[in-house]
Image (cartoon, rainbow, N blue to C red; front, side):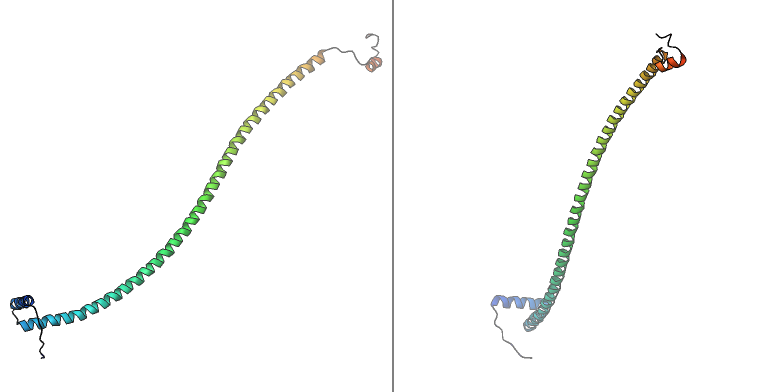
Length: 162
């Protein structure tokens, strides 16, 4: 195995010695393990970083797809809102027509009541006049009117009426 010379500060060297002693290994073995761990860890970290970037790219793609779906849904929602607004206007217009028809029906009922009242009054007048006509007819039949001149000549009554 090749040898490497490394310069360390006294405080770092003391820490390395304390850790090596705690683990029950030599200073050289401890430093070799630390370097190996660092190098392997760096490769592992680079690999993990690369995998993280791949996952991040996948996540970004998913986010973009979700944004497109959200935009599509928002457009559909705004279209539905326009349809609802149109239907709402139709309902308002229909309601206005119903209210107008109701007002017209109330007016028609009022007119019917007036016409019925006027018809009743006319029927009462007709009944009154019929009664008077009947009375007049009786009065006329009871009156003794002289016969016409032709009737007098025909029956020879002319002597009585002079």
